[in-house]
Amino acid sequence: MATADEGGGSRAGRPGRPRSESRRAAILSAAGDLMMEGGLRAATMEAIAARAGVSKATVYKWWPSRGAVALEGFVRRAAGCWTPPAGAGAVQSLRFLVVAAVRLFTTTPAGPLMRSLAADAQSDPEIARALREQWLGPRRAVAAEVIRRGMREGELRAGLDVEATLDLLFAPVYYRLLLGHAPLTEEFAAACVDQLMAGVRAVPAETGGEARP
Image (tube, rainbow, N blue to C red; front, side, top):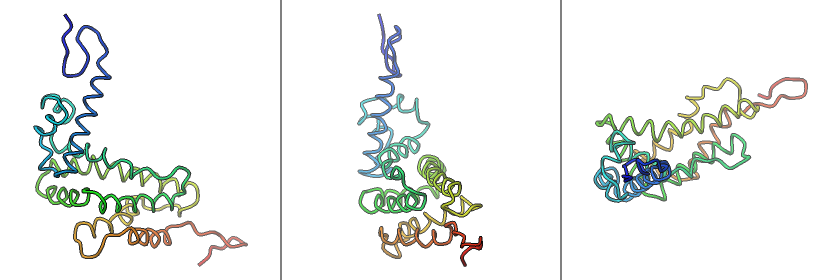
């Protein structure tokens, strides 16, 4: 008689992938919801498994730790704000990404959650690693490709230090988010991008081949 396993499907040959993917999606959805509702403290392995309707062993099959699954669930919930408009140029795309980050942090529970995660990461290597790998890494990769495309297409100056440009783009957002010394607004984010772009845009050549001052 066929028996079901935690990976989905049965051991008698029935395809397991759809069921496995369904369970994985349910776990990520549960983790994301719990993170948005109560932060990392609420997203325990027990709570995630219970809400997803699976065992803790099933969760551990895909993620090595609570921090990893919780961050991935949160990232999945926030994924929509990291897709620039189709056909947008590099400058427009970068402005979109920075402003979208501010909108996420100021109009959803993601702002307080990010402050809590950043604080916890100082003393918890697991959370610090998950934050870098699940949150910062993928988002920096998206923006980095926009910068490289801008250089290739002549919209941005050639030879930019991509990593430094990324820090200059997003650091003001996290600075105000974490320290709260001034309001974090979309207008502020757009102004930061515009000022940075004034320095990194490609300079059109005047007639005769000389660059504008």
